[in-house]
Length: 238
Image 1: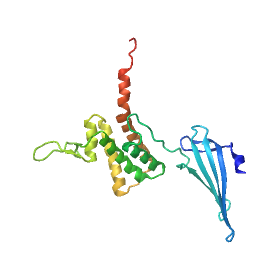
Image 2: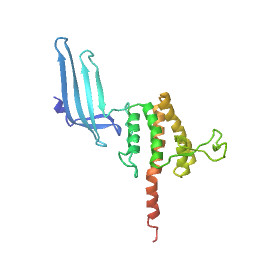
Image 3: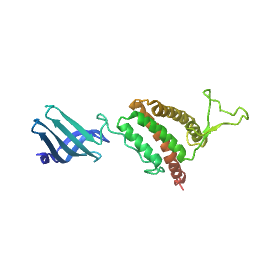
Image 4: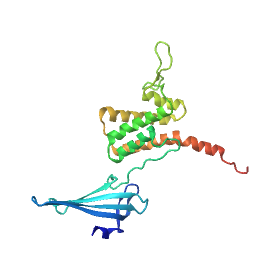
């Protein structure tokens, strides 16, 4: 009977589009029973295609004889409530599958699965990865009053190789603005709390933090290429 459902259209949450119409492309039923205990259970597995983005979804509708009238539905890839999952982006000069890209995608995966502690730590790791990829190994540090830290004996400006210094190194190299540096320092602190104090930031806050680090990736890996195109474009009338 399951095969008769092939081609039917149903509305379910899509991993990309949210709640939208899907077409059943394949289906089968699984069943087991324990006759001695008079217990049985089964699942209907449906392979559905989103009528919008054409992404596939495996749906498991499971029932159990000891819980009559109730069935559980599980989707793969998993859904976060009825909202679409966040899709990782590709960046022009960021090597796909490389260390920075891998940490970025793992952070997105942690967020999509509601793992806010791991996602918070991933955001910090991602900033550190960008610094290392750009060969930013150290930078200036400032007091809480915004003054440069200097050596007491010589008065020379102190350069530190921790993430605080590296973020300021991005600023010194002209890769980020002062306001971006302030945001990245707050993201650094959020990541430290997640990694060292097992803090669980709200997922909504994590999503906004991911927006911020994606902006960093665009600025570092996409905008230089855009600038080249703009500089080389043909001027009107020439």
